[in-house]
Length: 222
Image (cartoon, rainbow, N blue to C red; front, side, top):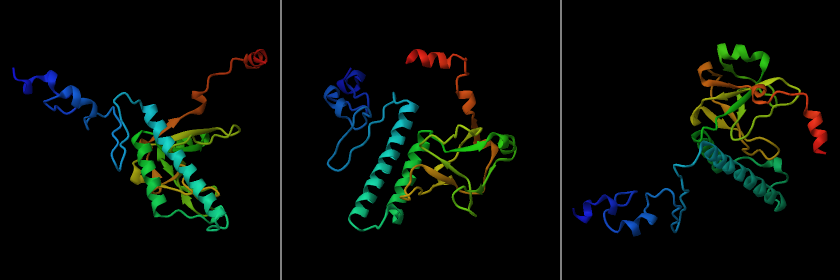
């Protein structure tokens, strides 16, 4: 048997026939290694990476973008380019970055989520989620939710979470808050989301039932 046809002498990543032992660690197809070049660094992706790890990595990118944007706006105010943070408006590069972050999150299956009063759940499951007036822009109709962050669930409100199975081109980033930056708020393109694109996450079902011993346990912990 010739060396060229000996499987044991071939690179396990690309099949390179010679000097496999020396070649394999630096093989471009070896995804378990981060390959650094003069201009770019490619993030290693391994088969062992779990869905939770992919979501965590995508959310980390979102948080880093938020931190960077806030720092740049603070510097702009300090240098006099902006009078206050509220004067900031997202430019084309910020919009493109936000879209890429959304693509990363959805690729990791971290889907957009909307909260809804429980009393409207049956209506939504039968007729779909429809746009309504937003709470912070009177007269503006939209379906607004979050991606890459946990939705807000006030303790005194009985709400459920709706996870929307949408593609990146079906949602658009919104630039919100005092600095008008992308912090994970998104709006759905269109006027409705059909029932087959909605998955219900019930916060009550996720919480362990109260046993009546919580106060006793808390006192013992003191």
